[in-house]
Image (tube, rainbow, N blue to C red; front, side, top):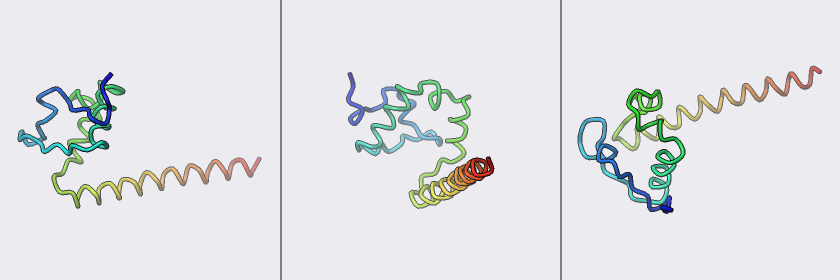
Length: 97
């Protein structure tokens, strides 16, 4: 079994970014684990260009770490707000009963 924290994608297209250039690989345990998880646990997701996850990742792709951080913060806040609203709605419904 492959160690998920030392995993590297074997497909050559996995090392090419969206501009057709060879992508720099962050060789650390977290990056390797996420590459392993996406390949092993969800093989049809980002490996298929027609899948919505691949299109969404292409839309959010950036080579600027600061831009990526702020996109992550913005998406995290949006998702967190939606989850908080759902939680408040469930609590309110349970209190009404």
